[in-house]
Amino acid sequence: MANTFKKVIDAQVWRQVTPSPNAHTAASSMCSDLRSTILRNPFVYNLISASILHRFNIISKGWQTMASPALAGTFGAGSTTAFVPSLGLVGTIAAGATTTSVVVSTAFPTAVGVNMLANRGGSGDKGFKLRITDTTAGKVEERWIVGNTAGTAPTINVDTAFTFTPASGARYEILAGRLFMLSAGTIGANIWRSFEVAANTLSTGLTTTNLPATIATDSAIVVLDEQYTPYDMAPGEGMVKGSFTYDTGLSALAATASGASTLTGQATLGDAVVLANEYRNFQIRIVQDTVTPAAVGQRRIIASHTVGASPVYTLGTAWTTQPSSSAKYVIELPNLMLMRSSGSANVFTYNYGDAAVNNGTNSIAAGAWSITYFGAAGSANAAGGVWAPSFGIQPDVARNARHSFNYFFRGSAGSLDLLDIAGSITGTWSAAITYDGSTTNLGTGTTGCYAPFENEGRMFYLNVYVASAANQFYRFDVQNRVLSPYTNTDFIQSGTAALGGRMAAYCAIDGTDRYNVVLLQSHLSTVCQELVVLV
Image 1: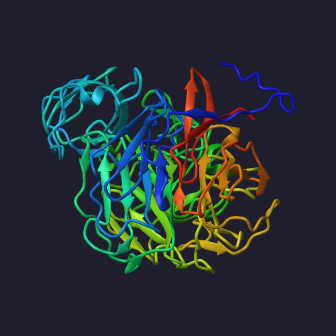
Image 2 (image 1 turned 30 degrees about the vertical axis):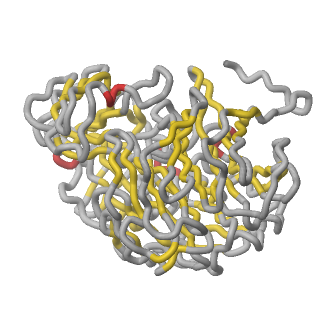
């Protein structure tokens, strides 16, 4: 489907899709999977209240009401959602694997039905992706699931053969993703919960230690996930294009040396062009090591690194098994979510992985929050605050724009702050930065979403509530710091301004062609509209 859109001559048009089963209410929240390939989950999730959760099928354009999330607290200002793509079902496999099947040893939390993992819910969709990390073969490989038996410990069949027979005890990861939901009010059990997608499992209350005593005002979360990559790279390839491959053609970097707590990169190409500490606080993951197989699969946070040929990465914690000097690795986002909430300057950082993270100065246990991992901003967040990450770009030659930059529109003041997570060991905030198109019209009712799939991963979309007017729409270029008006909808808004994440983005895929698509629920309405971004 070639894009034949003619700039200036042709007009982009919002189209109405199936209305939501419930009208947007104060603090309702949408979120989606921002992966740029067919791997992405085919649903947008919409949390309406403490007991109402819907999902929207991006292919069939239909809505489905899900089981109650049964959130505690008082749903309202501060409630929000986030989708993380890498954290699905995780465990080890039993003996008896073949090159095309594995038997689960670490049981699922909820039983699955026959072949339930072979369709993700889209129209004619593929199944979930199964990743095997094998410390006997020294390889990480991923395959599509095409069948499974029923139960909590199923046998899983894949579409094409692994290049090895997975050994008993090898790690499995089903890259299905997980939805996180936060209610509001006084902190307590079940105010913060997750929903695991593949086995349809709602968690019990997750830890809330280090969150505010009361969730109020507004909350905004940005997800930093290893599956999120630049627009021209695939999940599993990380942020820096390598000169080597692993698995079935995924790019990787190749080490040239290693130490107990270090890894040395390429002498030319790949990471030989990065600046000093450009990827501090990102993670290194070993994706292949046939010389030292036990090293494969290890994830470590980068505490610092040098510049130029053969950069040396110093890690926050030592290797459990030191990789060989020929190991293949990727540099990825660190599997953390960052939240601004409750009129606070703090960055509430949540480690949603299944292992602790440590940058050498601060650490966060698995499934825990920290208010010191990244430093506090200069000013508190306000109603209408939104995050705009930039992981989807490719940095310019001078590195004026980087994957580590995370912009934050502060809310009613219209100020734009910048958190560079690599700027220091606890990140560096720059307050009220200069940008073209600066506006103060970003208060209650403002919502936004990042669409990293096309337009070189540069575009973040903003909708601003204006009473008795059409939805006011903007687009912010995260690479070049320009806010400009964009295609407005023709739907007239009504009522008093209300909080809520009414927008989500997803990737439309047609062969090798990809398009940003933005879904918007109108203010205090069931009306939903969709825009295919063609320019």
